[in-house]
Image (cartoon, rainbow, N blue to C red; front, side, top):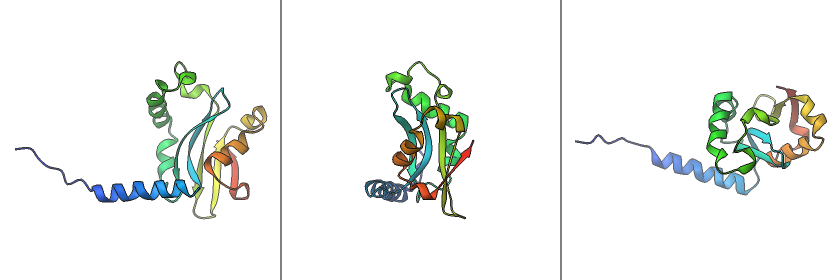
Length: 135
């Protein structure tokens, strides 16, 4: 006899609906990003209200590598490249001070002057609530 699992589908569906709603209304997001040669950002993100712990799980090299491998076949400009070949970083939220933290190498902002603006726009976070950190 086959064993049946009691999978809590309802909470998963409810969370997915909350995420869709938050994205639709422009809620700020947290996650990891890469700057591609085209100048576009490639992101793996989650609305901040649903994202507690999300960045911790995505900022590790093994998690970024797995995510990258899943995208390679669909994005020609990264197909033959490693995830470490591009400027990258992550943005997280600290409840204690209600600030967003962008972690990346400072030299990326010198080399790519519009990078800060791209990150803030993509993740929909206001500049006054952001702290940039060397990471």
